[in-house]
Image 1 (cartoon, rainbow, N blue to C red):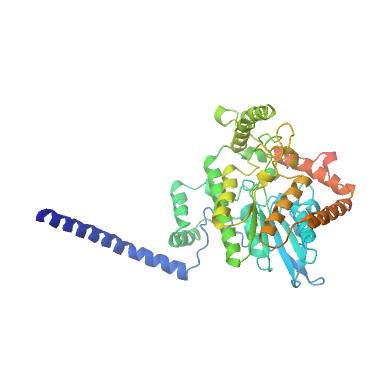
Image 2 (image 1 turned 90 degrees about the vertical axis):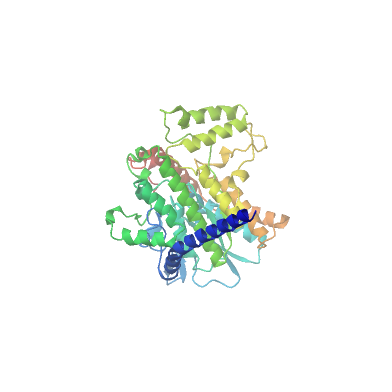
Length: 460
């Protein structure tokens, strides 16, 4: 018995000695990590951070000295629509910035019928005595990493809230992740470690500074998508590794945006990116593999939908979207990132997929789990009615925050304001929207760099 007790004591001492040895051996690494975090400037890991090299980007807003307003300058209007706000925020004004891509911009129409405008009308109708500035910062083809830069900028202008709708444009720019696609497994592993260890990230930056600058991850000052060029669709191939890196980077970027707004004490409302499944076949399909043939999944899913088998249809239609070699709609991983991160962080979410699902395959007012195609003008851009529903849901979130109270009087005032606003838009506005829609379909089909037909040239 005494021998057993003695052996047990020796065993405990041996484990304690091993633990102390491991702790002492790791102590220098923890000391270096503390020193780097305290004294060194450590940007995000350069290998996978598509924001690296974006320091040269100019701000979206410029101060107009005559009007004393911050405005979106003319040279940015290829990607944005005009908007502005006062240099000095008026007393009692609540300022909201709406950030995202072309959905936020109101494409294929413009900001006059985007959900930001309907949101402003909703807020004003619910609180006539209050003042609201709803500033549209929707950039055409802007992915989350560019939107993140816009967020950093607008947080300097005393926002009272941020509304975010992003996720559809993550796969558009080739140069955004070109370096990631060329990395070996060792550098990818180091980059993943760098996301948690400042020392590794600092060493990456240190050695990268001596590397060939032509291999650096540098984005152009404005968006340059693959589909903007002749043969752009051919650049999309089956590349699961690259796709996972893109989805992972979206997750990291959204995490950063949520953390940034929380640190600034500014509430954020995030929208789940939704896209059409019924009327949008895959943009590029791998016909050589039956298991990843997106077009086959789409055709069978569409047949199931028309036959009233909604559950089977949704599974197949989502599979078709996920197998699309040219992913112009937010993938399941991106949608899940929005839901999960917002839930973890307590960020209010507008479930766009749910609010745009009101009817079944017969048109009966019974949600079937599939977004209604009539709410989409194309693969991702909502119709005017779709924008109005999104604005209603965002307004309800502001009501939950205590900003407004929505009652029958507010609803009546909104209906009057919305009717007057629509009446103010002439036929040219809708004609331009229809023309942009035709151009969007050309672009999505990979003909963005092709000569423009006579009936698709700009209106005079």
